[in-house]
Image 1 (tube, rainbow over the protein chains, first blue to last red):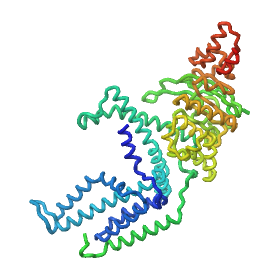
Image 2 (cartoon, rainbow over the protein chains, first blue to last red):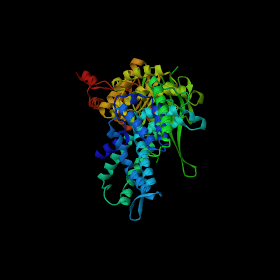
Image 3 (cartoon, one colour):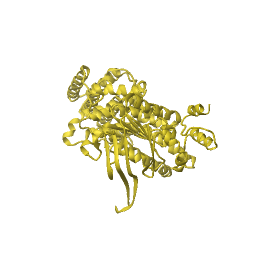
Length: 277
Length: 280
């Protein structure tokens, strides 16, 4: 039971249910916004740009009514990566040394790069977790399907990908439950999933994975048949029960995003002697 | 004309070895000819491997006959141009409720069929509402299907088919994975569709109790229709049913045994009430 709840938490516990302007925004705006934000923070050459990016993000977080600790949750996953990046840049960037520890030098250039890298990574993670925290998975796939429709010109099966994603989301809890059932059944017959080193434990997973895969394939084939029986024939000629429609606030959000991008990139590339990275 | 008609229907499952040579051929459906009147409630009964599910899949054009013909509302199921019309006309509900619900929210799942058919948005919402109300699941429309009971999930599946406005609903062992409560819910929903909406219902099952309300029953064994008639006619042949490895409802069996011992009882007693009336 405990394990299952934990797994469910990871995969579906992302969305934070509350009422806010950000929650109500069209998913396409949020997707585009996240993309713009992530690209923008790679253009900065001074810390003024980062300051603006932090301010903007703080403003959006305030609007979203999502407690800040939920954003930080995502940070835990990249903590190790963050540390490595910072230390690597801090000690291994050549330049004017400001601090020496035995053979290792911390340079002025290194500090700048390390700090800006750490900022970039954190903003990236917090910015994108804001997207998943304020958008239901369903809404997200809808937004992707409609927002990326132009990719059809390049023969990208946008509808099919979106359909696959939403089916995957629907089946996650079912397959988790199934995993739990198989696990208990195998444990009842003496299987041991918990002791031994990594290799032993990985090998112990085989009797779990084989039946799980077999059942997943059977489910997939059943589902395909059920979908066909309900006249599913791809995205062609399909109507939507909940079509996406832009409202006034969505256009306003686009405008704000555009303004943020242009202004912060302009400010972030000014030659400021004190704040240059 | 009958809404469903099969003529000398044969369907072979061909087992091939690794090189693609035919190893064996099993006729799952073997020269079946039957007719179903519009608006009737039909039950197809048989134990595992009798070919009843294979037969059911022909009505929705999921399977195409090896030999013979199936007409659904006058359309030949081998006609590729009519494929989607046939599937809209004859909806199908499958055994496992988890493997046929596509939506992450009940109402979205019910809307899936109409979406595929290209029904305008406003009408989809009307259809979803009316279908969910017809199976008594309207108050669950915003729920996640994962949190529903088996019987409720199956009723959502029925609503999903109903929203496509079919003339026929084929239920392929819809109760096989449910508890007795869920079974009752689903059968009640299926009967309501038949009686209130006038939809032709084909119920595939191996539970004898479920065919009590049918207008006509077909019993299948080894791909053939071996018995055909009203439930009463079927149930009066207890020995034959038992030889087909089908379990007769307890009341029917009791009445049959008592009659054999000389008690003057009518043939084919189906319910406890009937039995009480007969001995009272």
